[in-house]
Length: 430
Ligand SMILES: *Cc1c(COP(=O)(O)O)cnc(C)c1O
Image (cartoon, rainbow, N blue to C red; front, side, top):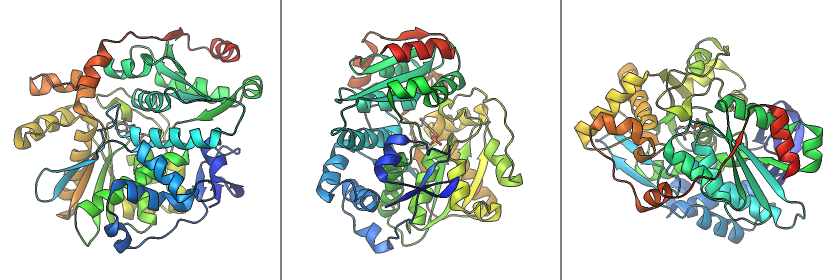
């Protein structure tokens, strides 16, 4: 399989280049040259999530991995359950948070770690992965790459702006994982990382790579769980998905599955008040403004980085995008009400991001009087956001043993200013 850059169809790259470079050299995002098509019977006949993942992903990686190597990778990467809960006849919740860091990002980060490990094994120069995080990506990447030979990870997170559990997940590992606690915002962290990638001295001294959602490889495991949800919902027809969205990596995984042949009636991009995409779908224009802090903080994104891929999939035709993606934005107070409603009506606890997803599905049903089966992607475990959820349900959330032991561990972070010169000096000294 060949890949091209969204900014230049002539710029072709291999899977290995896509994996290790992250961003195309012209600043565009990588997309596959030809998306393989699969039948409904194919999706139905897969017996397990791992089997489905192997068969969906293989066409993209077959120049690099044999089928049996890919099978090993998928078995290692997806070694935790994926569950579907019925709220009622028509509304389902796809629980993607049973991985080690309790958010859906474990799927992509673990797959990325396994594939990078195998493709890096023959490379003498150590790989250094830089990740800017608002909480969940850094946790998933740190956990997935922990103790992997020949790969170092440097996570930049904004001091005092991630939850307690997230901070412990990022800072308690040590070994090849370094946590930089930046005096500033997530935007500062992202700016430092972006600058490092274009700094001549840094890139000649370090072999840098990215694990943020600009990396196409993160989309492959994400495409798989849409297909798994469709199969498990046992319908012969198309389905609705509601996705709590920030950088739109998760929803782009779904669009990829749809391009591969998965029957999807509508994707709902469910947003908090950071609503740039709502305005984009109406006008085709993006207005740059600062991200606003909300209780669903993983979606506090001003400009979704995967929008360039979405435009590419639909040839920038706004009408076509509107036929496949609906979007609404919801306030924190509606989100809190929804957490309470779901808890009272179904005795089921959702995190703030998932609550936004349920709001999106309800809004779609109201507007289009559509009663087809709908699946809300549940992106995090409520325990990860206990500070928000516990006061709403007026009850403590039971923590798993893994989380409890994490909270007892010591934090190991290096405090850093938000100035590039300091960050650069640090990188050149490691
Ligand atoms: C990252 C994240 C999101 C947003 O996902 P995108 O792929 O950036 O759209 C939603 N919910 C949670 C819990 C997350 O960690």
